[in-house]
Image 1 (cartoon, rainbow, N blue to C red):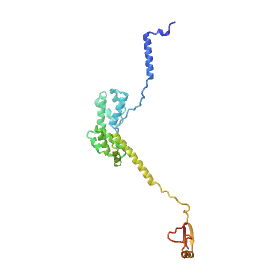
Image 2: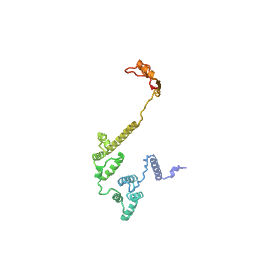
Image 3: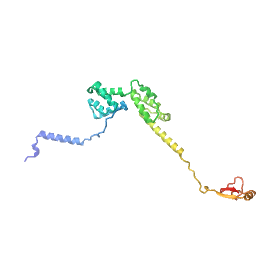
Image 4: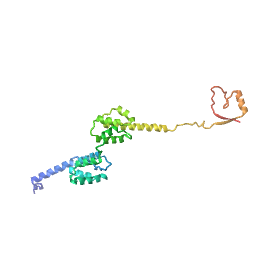
Length: 258
């Protein structure tokens, strides 16, 4: 009886081998780990620049087609932003809104006004809270001003720092924004730690040590006659030793004259 493998035609065998090789190759491949990314939600409190950047990152990672981006973004609008989108659809027509139109209209409605002097606000910005809070305010204004040279970013960020941080940060001569921010946070933490130690030492109670032998004093009553006698003999009123310059009693008494 002929081998069962001979029942298969040559093309079928070749296809079977190719399929097996392909399956084996796929099984041996190392697939990259899938990163879970949630689409960012947007409301009127959100910074549109930051939100649009995160939305673009989501689309790029998932390779979202251009024609699907507006619909996906609209599902994640909240509050006034959702009402704004309904009006936008009525104005342009739902199927006529491209991603670029969506972003432009979003910035027009929720972004800084065209009359806002972002660069002026950036140069006047001063740190009033933590370095982290100051950095967030600085970054928002920096996005509005457009591109600035690294030395300009460092200069304006440094000029708004608290005076208690400037000397230490300047001594390190930072050349990029990330470095000057990192230095400011480092010295802020150092100053807070130093202040905490100083405060704890100030509040630390004094450590007094009491000698139990001195905690109670002996009471010795002397009569007027005894006082006169000791005075005549030049004796100490507290002990039986001669009284003179530099004399110190080894034992302390409380003398009560009767």
